[in-house]
Amino acid sequence: MLIVINRIWPEPGSEQLLEEAFSRSPGMKDVPGCLGFEFWRREATGPAGHPGAGAADAAAGAGGRSEYLVVTRWESREAFEAWRQSAHFQHAHRDTGASAGARSELAVYEVLRRV
Image (cartoon, rainbow, N blue to C red; front, side, top):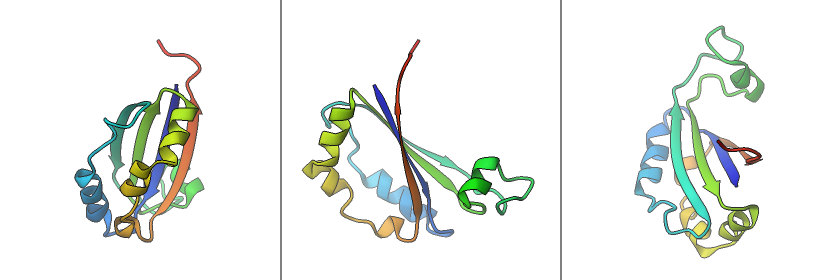
């Protein structure tokens, strides 16, 4: 199993646009090999290095921005890569206006043990 997390820090003030874009999305339930999709939000913290900011905020330079995570679970790396090459992926990512100016970071994790 593969877990793919896209961390997104939208421009301050554009959070609502990003949330609306994801609420309009048909989701991933019909994508072969996709076992789950979740969209998470963490509220904005203080400026990077501020006592209220976490170490990850300071390292990423994302202080003062809300953070969103797009978390997907996949049967295999091959299923994930097939989706990235698909028309469904292109369609889902055609409107990038909601994420204009956003910073993002993609992380891919292989599940080694699941209880």
